[in-house]
Length: 155
Image (cartoon, rainbow, N blue to C red; front, top):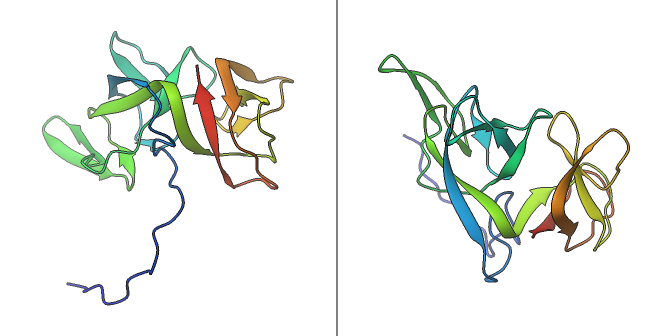
């Protein structure tokens, strides 16, 4: 068993899927289907009521919140068939943010107050062409390049 003996002096500023502020927010729960969903990723309506899956161009539901109690385990027929790190596993109840502020990874440079769009692969962008708009959402912070964390305000 490995032991941790190096500790950072400061915590990271943000983590994908973490709440960004203490402003009022609305969170719902949905059962994950299909494949594990990583924290901070958009989800769409699943095949059944009260289910969700990774966004792939379907009916947008919300963004998966970071949840340290999530096991990331996928269970089929009573057997663990996979484990994802920093994710909700298939069959797990996921916390989904539908209103409020949340940290996500921008796929391009974005500017505060730009609208938020999702590509068919579920990447966050401010480019409207060929992408799905998140209704009432805007970027609350800016980035200078792709792959950086930014705050999305869902509203």
